[in-house]
Image (cartoon, rainbow, N blue to C red; front, side):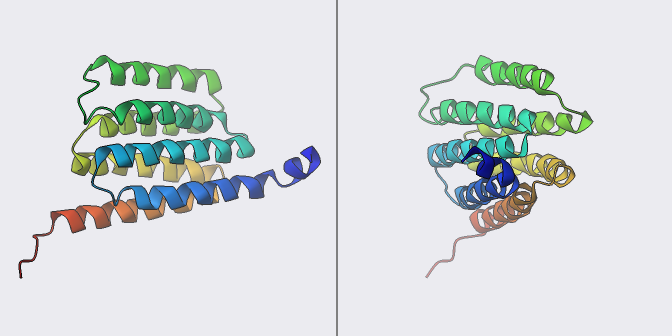
Length: 177
């Protein structure tokens, strides 16, 4: 079984990536902050699996922290958490994780993406969450191309399109009958 996994790790990675992409494409269409954040938890855990099979541990660390962060941030809308130290703690953890898992100069892109994601996901306004996620897509797109994460590359294109659709759809004037 281990031989099968080793021989097919790239394909297994892409399968996890395309599952994560399916979640990522749909999550920005929801208008409830908590629902978006909980779908982000699932998505981040699937990306952890994807990057583990590719042997890329900075994105594994960023996505694991992202899953924990998104779960905690999902309580922000209900005012169960308010402390501004929470995003600061995650910023520090992201930097520390990047240092511990550093592979090459490309490892800085997941860190930059993580910083934007922390700021974006701390917003309770879903519109700002979407807007601030655009630089996250750009960083991951470049990182994924460089590291042959084809599912990740496709994901960023589709998530970007999904965000634009959601921004247009939710900002257009409502039709009256």
